[in-house]
Length: 293
Image (cartoon, rainbow, N blue to C red; front, top):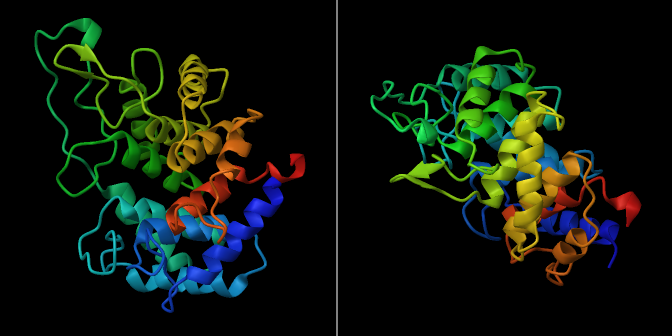
């Protein structure tokens, strides 16, 4: 099956399983959450299915909290990392609803993680700067790689690339790079040992650095892309294949086997594992590869 056909089947599936209120869950016919809803809107952006886009955008606006943030779902009344997904999605799929975006961006730019004090008597080879402030998963938490990457992307696509919070987020990502490039979920060292990178946080961090205008010629980016290339040789799940391929194609890399490997996992109904989240992620990973199918 061609990439174009796989994408079209994926989009039809996403429209078919959108709930009556306009959102999407992690699995079809389950409770809608902000993250899969935002991903589905990104996957449908530029598509002719305007009704699905408008319904999803309205769902995000309705679920925004009074302070401008978003919880992970409508039942969650505390702002969280999901705010970055909502900003990314709304900023990328509409030029209207600027008030919701403005409030969300203000909340996200002001949201701070817990930061530590510089440690003493640390092994210089294992130094991590505890004062580098990315973004946490939840209020009062420490910074982690994935919400930090999402935060950089959200502010950049919303027109705040020059924000000091973006620069500080990039500083955090640079500080938390694994020894041979790439990222895991947080610190690259534990108990005196180097920790290995993983595909989703590495892909998200690379996407964030691109949005922050850190280019492939930079050593950090080129080394991490090489690490991602190595990790992708053993990638077989839709999650890893989609995240890795999305980052690689955004850096104009076209590994010939990965799109076919990902398309080969698509179910007859157009989904990947019956999941709107995975299906949207796969559709985004395959975007802009259609013409070479």
